[in-house]
Image (cartoon, rainbow, N blue to C red; front, side, top):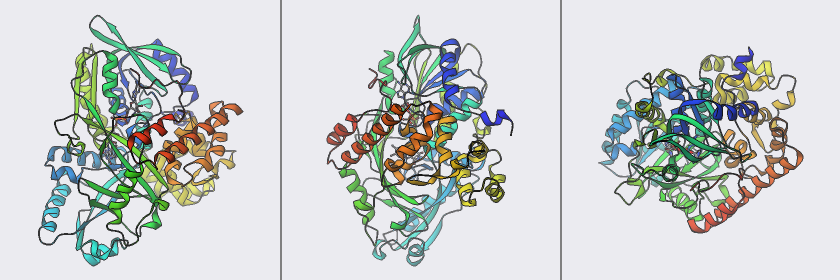
Length: 575
Ligand SMILES: Cc1cc2nc3c(=O)[nH]c(=O)nc-3n(C[C@H](O)[C@H](O)[C@H](O)COP(=O)(O)OP(=O)(O)OC[C@H]3O[C@@H](n4cnc5c(N)ncnc54)[C@H](O)[C@@H]3O)c2cc1C
């Protein structure tokens, strides 16, 4: 492999030092605020149109909502019921594009059973929706829906109580590791020339006459500040949109409110099933989603007005999920079955309705001031369309004509060659002395970037060993997270590059020291820093566990937000 391939889209310590100089020394066409999927999508869209782009993220890539979703690329059956046909069609087309061309290594089909509970009308009603769902997305690479009798449905999901259904319909959607997908969008943008920098918070806006002409940023590791000059600034900060608009001193064209959604994670053997589930709840739906050796179950939908960076799950949220899933399970789940819990905030465009679950998931783009745009709303699945809309809008403030969006033709890093490598998994396994199962696991996380990952183990066979306390992951994955994937703290690795924090009942504590020691040489940590990282991570886990025993959002938030931050220099809120 040539050295260029080894560096493709690399976000390591060397690049970090270099990007700080570039941010202050160059003039950009477009600067994007926010390293969630939308901001990373905007950076990729703009870079592949030939624009000079910078993307700054206050914390870690996907540290906001984009690592805390249900992890589905879906049209949203529920939106069909709300008659949002345009939204569903668009999302299904994106699902297909991800599965086939853009991210086949990261996105894969997932089966759901819709249990039917009412005689006569329900089957034709749901089947009409499913038929629409099957046909709306055009070409499709997931199977069509299928009707099941009660016995058939129970064979697919033996965990269900016999009296919980009278039949069922099976259908397919797609799923992805959201944090890893967002990271890969960011790295692909960097590969095409975007300057991507995390731990870099926008703390002010620069102006020339009546125009926004750039942003002032703070390095959240060192506290240093500098200015970035750009023709256009795009605010893609999700639930922080209003905060950034306040900081800019401009009146926003729309407002964004936060709705909290909680998921729990339980071991796969607690629910005997060969398919996920979608269940109706009194106000929304509940998903049971297969996630490697686990099930992810969620979600809730309640207004949230507290800490935006660390939304906390309460005992009541968890009880709500358990109550709803236990309505249909033959062997109920208990609190003791829970391996992990996470909470995220939906960035919803503020509308008339008081109930957040009825607010639209559609997105909006607005020119807030000359040289400044905001994009928000939507959902994960449609990030690419949102990004293209944002750059189309922003183009009016560029001093030249921008090219059309081409991201529907730009595979993400790791997609190229993925299918061939899957077929060659046994050969790769033999070469690196790994089990073929392990190689397939790596291919589904890194695609053809697996070569970059495994090259780090040349002469270091110890890096091919599993991580202490988290045997699903290899030591080399922690090293690669810091050397290539922009991870700067223990939390970045245990929570987003891997999901140890929700997949193991110890929530990462049993792995913290060994992972910190793997990161230390790459990130130049001394012994004191290693201890601080472990302490901060442990305090966070403890605060999350405590908050999950509290009855109310206020009580949970008070505990969670008192825990120290891995990035102490982040200003929160920024205004
Ligand atoms: C519980 C839940 C389940 C969901 N499930 C699904 C699903 O299954 N499928 C689906 O399609 N969608 C789903 N969604 C919606 C989807 O996750 C979101 O729409 C999407 O992730 C939002 O991405 P974003 O980039 O707009 O925001 P974010 O990911 O929150 O990114 C915003 C970023 O801006 C950064 N930022 C803030 N202030 C500053 C500053 N001053 N300077 C620099 N950076 C800053 C933040 O740190 C953050 O990383 C779900 C959402 C939730 C909450």
